[in-house]
Length: 627
Image (cartoon, rainbow, N blue to C red; front, side, top):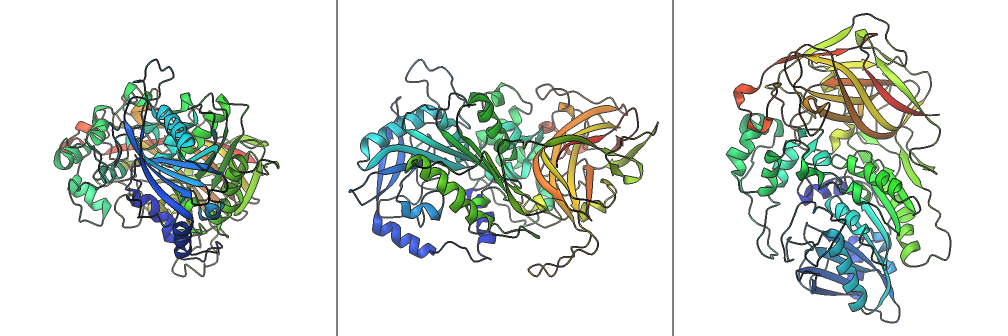
């Protein structure tokens, strides 16, 4: 499940891919012709150990004089086009690998599209399996690999797998299958914990992404190659207006639109807290016993699976200390590394075509080494990270990077931000949060979910009275933030619940030059978003047990913002913004303690929010600084 249509996953790839010339030497038409001339397409129903058959497509080189490795992707998003006479225009992880003639395999996972069985969202992993009916994604991966190596004639006995987003989860789950032929896995932007990455962010329901996705991602009772019709139509191009004035409440998204027709969407209503339903869908504790090489890939600006990217790498590293575990993060949105440029995202230019660089120099090398020729050492470091701000690739022997020093960046009165702790005896900033006029997550008109917002100019929010802004003085030297950012807030609310959104922003100098590709953009004092996250306050002590706020009582709320590697240049400023809504990226909080999935329009009320910055109640960011 990705909380977007599949085509939305591909939009960021295509949008900037079309605007720049790719260093890849062949056109799509040339690659398509190469596949038809050199590959035979076959389709099989591969039987799993419990008797269920999964639809499996195989693109195998026609050349039988050599043996080739297998590269596999398992997906809930369809293997289309179906039919042995209908070919994909490109196959495999990236075009640079096409002429290495891998045997490329695509499979519809259990219960999706042309496969048999019942689909379960993020199938819970079973550590102990006693019977053939004890199945999960690791067993389906094992059985598929076993069948492929025994039935595809010209394979060399080595198998790799890759996948982005939901297929990234299937890659992670398959990595623990323990099949001896599996030599390399690359989970890319993998879903890891459904409650933390996709359904919710720290208790806040991701309403626009979920609402749009499940309209097409529907339960099926039998194999099919036809997309089902949507439950409903949305003809309003303005997502902010649509969700505020047509969908109205989280409750009405079900009552007025889904109406019980989609069990996956309704699961969120039945399980608003982190209960057993979500816990058993967390793959991270099960990523152990891996014996082959892994490469986790993601983007700093992944609007969907930041948590999955960083925590999949960390879990594999911790639980499998003796394997090769490579980590790659670039300046990409969700899936952006699969495109043909990646140089620009919205108004931000990263200085080079980072996507083909990764494809040719990292991804192709990784799979070639472990599946084709390992006679020479693999010249890839533990971590290859793109440092934003300075726009350069950096290599590290460990992640987090050695030499990172933890420091606190404190809020002060008058909107100041510094590395010095406050000394005031009494000091706070406040604002009135009105859920009936929520802060937009983006200044742009969109359908309610956007990738560009991850680097978007925040001056639209800076101008609002319900957004607090704190900034440093002009920096006298470069400051590089590396690794995790955590906001340690001391807050109070006049209500009994509240959301807290923390944003870290790079403020450009007033004399920042124009960009030739964006002449309409004023870069002077541009407030580029670097990282943001939301936290639903009632989960501040326990994500499984919500707790109301005591009105107007100073309370600790800690917000994990995920990792960064960003340099704030000399002459820039570091800014932090605090607000209590980011709509409709997240649903609105009525600001009273209750089950928000049952809240009526009358329940949404204004509240006064306070952020303290005094000696006895300091609010600050805990950051890592890389010297």
